[in-house]
Each structure stands twice: as structure tokens, then as C-alpha cells.
Image (cartoon, rainbow, N blue to C red; front, side):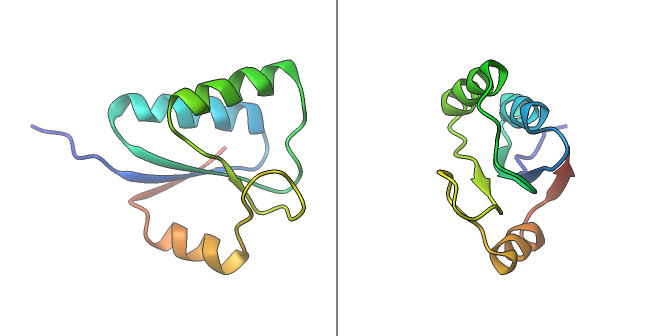
Length: 92
């Protein structure tokens, strides 16, 4: 049985640090992952900086629904399109 690569959208709502960790981990299985951090700006903590390094190594560029941050912004319409086109949507 062969595994098929999936397009996964991971929504980081409650715990941005955990969302970044999970997103990087999903790439181990060959999945293409889009990480969208939501609801608030990502806190500048040592833990988040470490996870951001893992994202970089995993070729994941996080996006956000929060306007005015350093991350690329996704409108609600763009987020909806992203989710509809995904094989799976995971919320952390």
C-alpha cells in the first residue's frame, strides 16, 4: 500500500507554538503543509523562535489572518479557498 502525499492546511488558533511544531512534523510524511496562524499576533518567545527555525527547515512559510503583522496576510476569502482545496484541514 503506497501513501499519497496530501495537501494539508493547519490552522493555528489556540496554541501557535504547537501548531508550528505539528506543521513541521507533518512534512516528515511527505505532505505539503500550509500553516495559517489565526486570532492574534504570534508572541515573540524563545519557544516560538525555535519552532520558526523548524518551519524554515521544513520549507513552510507561515501565513496569518491577522492584518498588520510581518507574516503574509490571508483574507477570509483566500482562507476559504485554501481550505476547500485541501485534502485535510487540521486545527490546533
